Length: 241
Image (cartoon, rainbow, N blue to C red; front, side):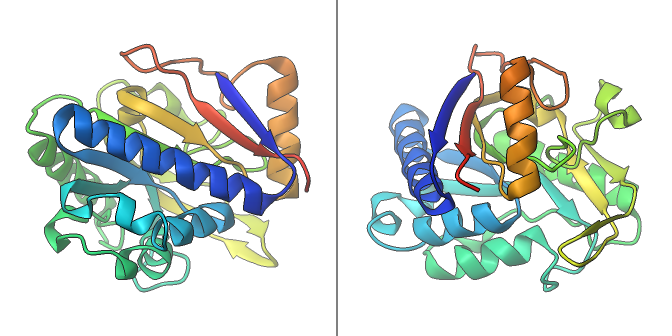
């Protein structure tokens, strides 16, 4: 695990944007395209806004990029609670990328199991495989209790061994002065088939969890699995909160 520590969120976001740009260009040079799974949250929003602005925007060939999501709340795509909406406002409306290469989770569908299956098929078709797609980069956040990509500690979904995408019911919890219902469609197992990952926790509680994880030298969910190519997560920490 590679850990980079910064004094404030803006510096963290700047370096995270540079990291995404570097992995994007390396991936395009290597195999002609770049595949990324996005996340949600305050810090990712700043990172995506930076990527969608100069000098980053023009240094990525967006015609060769496919954008997916690692998890999503089960809300309409135009809801401020949607991870897609965050990316749309911060990044997607600022770049020239074919609409067919933007792959939001159909988490607004009533039949969440069917939505999960549909997203699995969309990923496999895009990657040209009937197995597990391998992303170039997956951006992950981390919650105050250590969850990432809608995978919460002690949930049965952590032990799922076959499905690539599955609906996850999260216990409602109070966050940001309101209620985060926490019904999400969470994508788990592509996280272990990826060229690179980076985790950027945000917020005071998330930073505190990061410190505990770092002190114990164990991953947030107690699952230390690098990708099939030997890559370990690159963790960006803001300890100035």
